[in-house]
Image 1 (cartoon, rainbow, N blue to C red):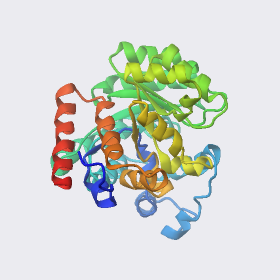
Image 2: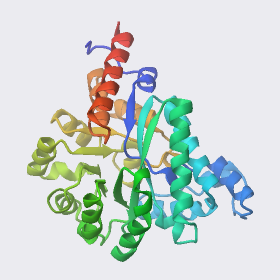
Image 3: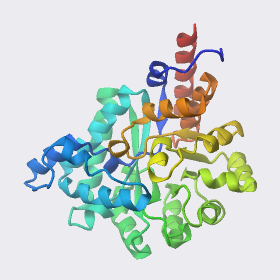
Image 4: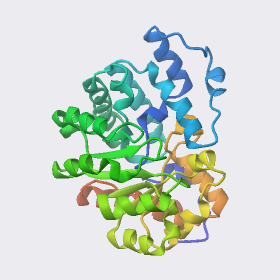
Length: 343
């Protein structure tokens, strides 16, 4: 493969890729928020897209969540969740995403009276229609809110049991302070016993970051780690994730919002060390960049080569929860795309 060809934005946009760290609720664009509020008879303080965007003032995880959760109030019906996921999947398909494994936060909705079934069925219908209409495959990852109780997570999982055929795995997100992974060990053990994949957020530069990474690897036994770039602080843990093929779902643009650093050096170090790290968009409606934009930002910051970008895309499929045949098919798509683009 030629290495002297710059990975342009056009190349990146067309490059087949998977997105493995994407919060569906974080794709609520201002125009859709306003439309859903009107449809559901909700009076918002903001009346225009610009006014919604003006509320996006955050410089750490806590200040982001303070904006993020209240915005979900407009999501009320199964159709709302369908529309939200469909809007994301259309944007993703336009940016070369061939497969997406998408987080959703049922507790953020059931806690305000929305039935669990409406949330998961709306999202699932969108995945079915997107495959038929856009040719993009996708699946759902149920995330527990770590700043809620372990009992709430367990109860939410029991609500999910009748719908496990619609869910590929479980995750853990929200405010990490004083909410270590082992708090939810019992529920994750049950999920594993029922055949689900496991992932957990280990957000960047949090109190106890490296200890939380150790817990998810050694105590929980996750299949992936979300964010997780603080792992470079412990080379022995880097060795473990490389040997086990555990993927790290990095999100450079959101990193630069919740801390002062995109973590470009750490991402490149892990990539060159053979760790299955890949690029994702996290909450793109709030951070202003979908997945191709995250690749672009990292290329600009770190000076990535074309080979680096292609390796990131291949990692995204290799760390996915697709079966081996599907992975091989998508990897072949990448090779064919690169051959055409570099001919």
